[in-house]
Amino acid sequence: MATTFRIACYAEDKATAEKAAAACFQRIAELNASFTDYDPTSELMRLCAPGAQHPFKVSAPLFDLLQRSRQIAELTGGAFDPTCGYLSQLWRRSKRQQKLPQADRLQAAIAATDWRRITLHAESRSITLQPGTLMDLGGIAKGYAADECLCVLRRHGITRAVVQAGGDTAVGDPPPGETGWEIKLRTFTRPGDEDALTSVRLANRAVSTSGDLYQFIEIGGVRYSHIISPKTGLGLTGRIACSVFAPDCTTSDGLATAMCVLGREAGEKLAATLPGVEVRFAVVAED
Image (tube, rainbow, N blue to C red):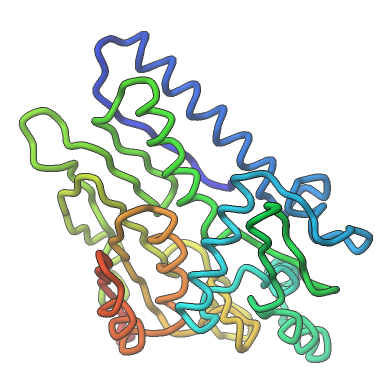
């Protein structure tokens, strides 16, 4: 999933912890094989293939993730959109070639990006996509995998645990004698403050941080984030970072991406309507 997963936990003994951790990493590999858009043979890419017959029956995890993705897309008015596959491909090419996409290709990719192109059939656990739809679950899959790791650990009798996947953190019960796990978040408000850290304590919660601190590119003197706006088809140009606290990491991951696209005012307004969700923005003011 293009990131490093880290697991910390309290177990009865080392052997139990190692067995549970191995099961977690096996689960991550299984989910990656299903969700990735880098492998044309993955379940997701077979669903999106031009010759695929729809409705297309999918695995329970992929159906669950697509259902959650569509819900967050609807909540955010498309600021998070799992059908942004063509935009993702164009932007990856732009980063390699150091130039912006051609206008006609960009407009075609924007036109193909719309979460309403996905129809879910719960009774048959199948999906129907409008022709020409390409998906990218990179903005939510890591959070889902982190949640799954907590489930795996619980099945091994381990409830005191924390799973980190890049900027996504899923937290179970707190360590013995503690109110929560200490999580350090990068928060900065101006260039040069990138190493600033804020500590929070969490238990049975999740937090995801998204922004352009590490993943960005400069083209024509303009700094573009790796976070793509579905409306423009390009990386965000405003310096912004956002941490979202939520009941689960799937939710926090998807919303963290969307909040950066929405911006502070709209993001805080949306968060206020969502039970159990808190958002913290760091909008960078250039000197």
